[in-house]
Length: 134
Image (cartoon, rainbow, N blue to C red; front, side, top):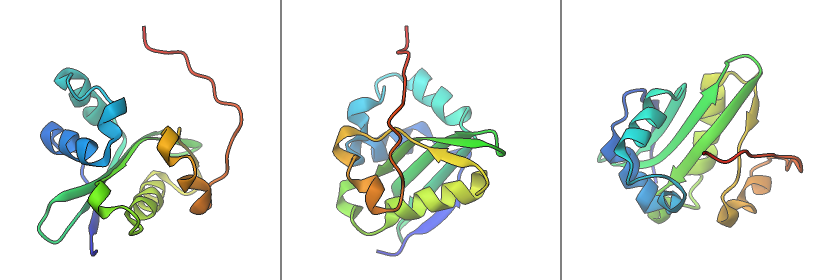
């Protein structure tokens, strides 16, 4: 599948939620809280998108970065109908380029995707700590 990658800082909530649902990532995101989704989009530093020939959003990578040392790729979502075609890998590479290849790219894998990241050359890090939202 041919897709066009772009940076879309003004990506709308409806399209974002739609691709989250089509990717299954919506199971772990607050898609019923429009205010939170809006904040997630507006406060992101890099929103990379993948669109098919018709303009349909088929993938998105949302990152927070300081553009110098670290980039946290918070959301990577690819429509399940479009997976296994390299779109996720391309979104990761494109996002990293936008944030700066000198940054360390960090992400937390969804349980179902843990085996994907070593396949595309990422290294596991055994020490991640989370303080849950209160």
